[in-house]
Image (cartoon, rainbow, N blue to C red; front, side, top):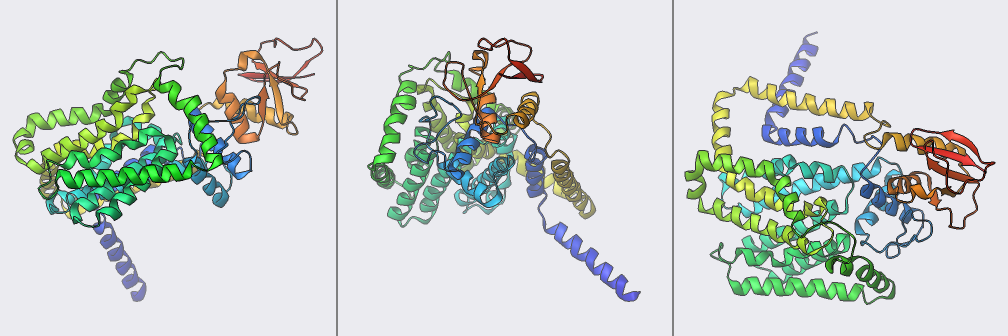
Amino acid sequence: MTISIIAGERKNRLLNFSVKKISISFLVVATLVSLLWVPNLFTKGMFMDGVYHALFAHNLVHGIGGFWTPQTADYAHPSYWDNPQLSEYFLSLWYNVLGDYYWVEKLYSLFSALIQLVLISSLWKIYFSERADIEKYSWLPCLLFLVIPLTSWCYSSNLMENVMSVFTTASVIVFLIFLRRGKNLVLYSSIGGSLIFLALLTKGPVALFPLAVPFFFIWSEESFNWKQSFLYMTIQFAVTVAIFAFVFSMEVPKNFLQHYLKVQLLPNLNHQTKTNTTHFAILLQLLIALSPLLVLSVIVFFINRKKVIADKLLLSAALIFIAIGLSASIPIMLSAKQNKHYLLPSLPLFAIGFACLIFPLVKSLEEKLKKQINEKASIGIKAACLIVMSVCFCLSIKNAASYSRDETMLIDIEKIQALVENENVIRADWSLYSDWALRVNLNRHYDKKICMPDEIAETNFYLTKSNEWGDRLPPTAQKIYSGKKFDLYQF
């Protein structure tokens, strides 16, 4: 009896010690991550672009197309030249290890988010390594990154930008390591150039902004001058170009590049694509994305403007990282396509920049809270965070196989699959020509492609919108499935 009591006391002391060692700030960030992504981790349904990216990875696993010759869900013209495939290749490796399940792409996106948070924290620590009072707040830019609404949406949608941002942020970190150490310039600039090429191979020219990062530090660092900046940028650029030239000198990659330039990049830069987007649309998207950070910064400036202005290092860092963020986002104005998720690579830099502006108030509030919160209250807060995280993980299990998006469509195609199990192609009515979500989900989850009435394919099945008689259906066709969104006929 006495032994069990002693053992119980030791267990409680060990638990209390382990809880005390965990930082409240770290737990708050971890809790927010759990709230944003964990409950829907195993649900079905995803933004259409994310499903397309999952399809490319799925095809790589099953030997359909290749890294330089990807194929879409289009039946007549499956070749895809719009984007490089590095992110999809990494996802295909996950499928090889975990299995080709619908939730793997969500887990992959969550992993990308966690890597990005680690990089943001590391970037803060490296830059402020000589200021211990600031360095220990590396959780702050992570928290700001998470409160940007666009962040949670991107990392729940399996976008190419998720992986590209890892490479661009890593490239900035490599430069900051050189900046702090002041040696091995050739080594660090070569690594930086290699990372930029990998980012370029993930989503294209948006990844080039780290090439100019050294320029922004010329006037802020006493030990860093324009000669070092120019040399670092030159070597970094030369390495990027050299790797690019080597890879795309080979026949298959060269063929992809030619099609990519012709089909995607040049038409968008010349505004030959059919879009109603203005040059300044991306600026509005940027303001919306950064609105929480802008509001916080304005509030802090009016409350603590003397402290903000007084700390020259913080003010200088804020201006530098916000400027780098702008260099990553403003050039998107050149393109005819200006989707909001193109901004993701710039968000880590904005998060760090705005964290510098609100730091004085955050530090002051934290110091006051530490004086008011006793040991028991601290353990209580930590326990509450752990409970919330536990609830999120329980919800992820409870919500497994439920629907977080496109429920009606996914239920219909799941039931249709049982009727056309041995078919590779389903003929579809012209009214479904532009239903890209239907095409990609049917192809991603069931390896089925739909073709239009004029496209030659051997199939006895015809898909229409619910309660609509198709344009090319013979009078003898029989309806074998009636759904909320689609009907299926058999000749």
